[in-house]
Amino acid sequence: MSSSPLNVQLESFEGPLDLLLDLIRKHQIDIYNIPIAQITSQYLEYMAQAAELNFELGAEFVYMAATLIHIKSKMLLPRDPELEKIDPEEDPRKELVDRLLEHERFKNAAEMLHQKRMIEDAIWSNPQVQEFISQGEEPELKVTLFDLVQTLQTVLDRVRNRPMYEVGKEDVTVPEMISYLRDVLREGARGESYSAVVLFERQRSRRAMICLFLAILEMVRMQAVTLVQTEEFGEIGLKKAKQFDDVFANEEALTAIQEEYS
Image 1 (cartoon, rainbow, N blue to C red):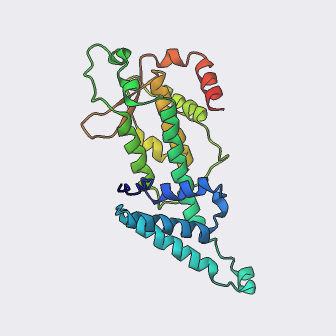
Image 2 (image 1 turned 180 degrees about the horizontal axis):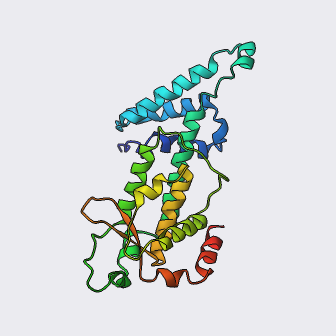
């Protein structure tokens, strides 16, 4: 009897940051104090297994491998204690840690959306969405959840190399962002559209941008806000929906969301 070949499956990842986060989680590593030699070894082992199985990895995986080796070599170099007192050297892992934290926040936001079942059909298949269009108005182009995700990702990519500052307390929350959006929209006239890109770029941290993204989705779900485009592939705008005043007539809606996110 001939034996069947061993079937080996290699877990796939969307990118090198996904792989690194998975390694960190599996080995319960402190993300702020990554043992770079251990992580580099495990990362290279994954790449070797992928090569053996003819599993094609993108160039970004190779670049990350080179980055990890570079960080490892910098950490192995001895540092003069006297020079360290005069000019303290920044931790070579800091930039990588910052990128991992940003990526993790974005993934957590996506997972939260999935858990809350805020998928495209749930938002736009609601028959009451037609009530957002007043008589005599031309309906705007339909905006999808994926359009909004792409807008946020574009802004995050654009500001990646721009200094981001945390103003005030760092733990900004989704309910706080809903209150912020409510106040912004209240000041405008009905029918006035606010650019989602401008609103994202007003934020001073990536965490705030992600919380704003979730706040927009919550307000769409509550039918307080509608998303519009004036032309195909154009910028996404936010407008007050007909139910805006009713939704925020009391604090019950915000209280419920605060409990949900606590």
